[in-house]
Length: 219
Image (cartoon, rainbow, N blue to C red; front, side, top):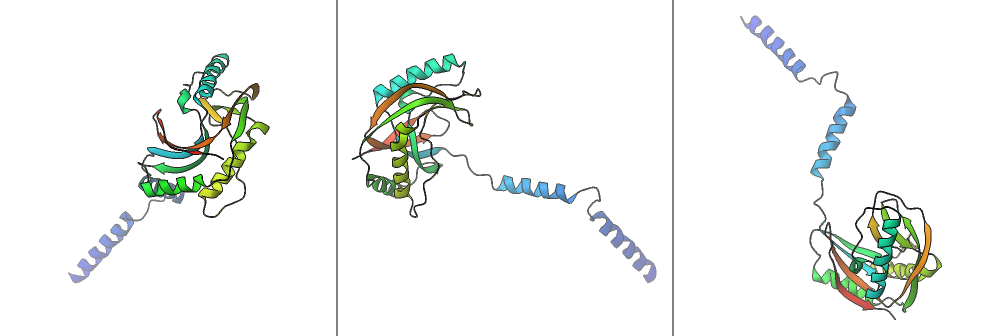
């Protein structure tokens, strides 16, 4: 009787091991993919709602000129993307925050204090080229007449960074709209203005709202 019970237990144990043995048809690659997929789900970050960035903003008259000419370029090239509002045209210099809500007031005050100390006089800037970036943005760019923006961006980045680094790759530009159709670079009549200040701008992700938190005069 005891011998019969032992043989039965042995058979059940063997069946149990077969039941939990991985099937030969499941590849290790497939298992790895599933693990990475589940890990990605666990690491999914909350959606960004707020952005803060330092920028150069054209004066109201120049912004209206940009809007009028951008509408004409949009029609001439058969684009359908929505034009930015005139009040939202800007040259991005340095992003400082992307997240849910705004950082605390002390952190914002520190960024402003650092930017306020930049040694930079007022300067003239001009954009004389229309082109599309790889991400679908139709933009205004320039060459010699935008060097002042490159200098300003580098000095601002150094002021905000505790460990200043070599010059970063930076292309000053004004985004006009986003569209799936690509526009080859072409010269346009220059649009120019005098840069007299740097603005800290608050943008809401997915919304057409820009709010200037502070303006820092140059010179």
